[in-house]
Length: 315
Image (cartoon, rainbow, N blue to C red; front, top):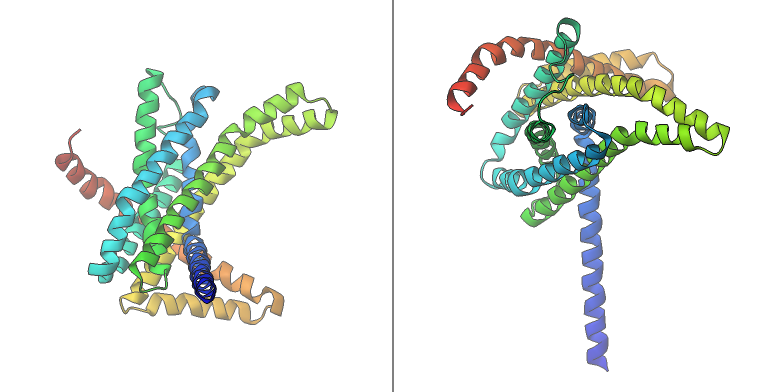
């Protein structure tokens, strides 16, 4: 009897450790995911454009294909690379973060420049629908790979544990959780107009039909706002990553300067608003910095990186 009680006691102790480990993994994954929020917002804002122009019946299958590609990107490629980096070359994480931040700044600035100077080349679709769908999915997965790399690198930098297995579990939870959130949101966004149309046509109540018509009328405006929110998030997160990474590399000047501006701006504000004002000033400063970094990178990408990439990679 005493042996059975001892065994049950050991099982209870193991269960407590396991529960604590699960709580720790979920807590760290939540914290790491929050750090990558800007890149996540951008991912959710960018993805719906790849479904535009297709028949409604193909929208969810396309989102599913992109989501599955995103999971493969994160779990099979980026997670092992992140763990290898954390073990063998942790000093590479800040420079890689800066590269990712620079990419986000470039993308954000290029979107603004194109919005005011050029039409979106993806706005019209033509050709064989099956081939076009395949090309769109491939393009979306390539874009997702860059954003996923940024998300996983930010998450890795936010994990506070020396255990390799704990880092792996946290990154796995982040990878699956963020992919589910992003592409779940994308699925809801791309089908919202169909739901609204159904409500407008088939609703039994006048209120239901009115809400349906409102959804149909409002979705284009919502997508427009979402695009600009994603662009702002790109610039904010890109600038923030670069400023923080420079601090990790020993140059604290930009970080201290922006912090000083935030403190000065919030000094004369009522207590309940000080944190909000400080955040707005910090995020705005990071975003403005990110925009100018992106502007500087546009000619570099066009005249140096793209020609080199075209020469090295097969067409």
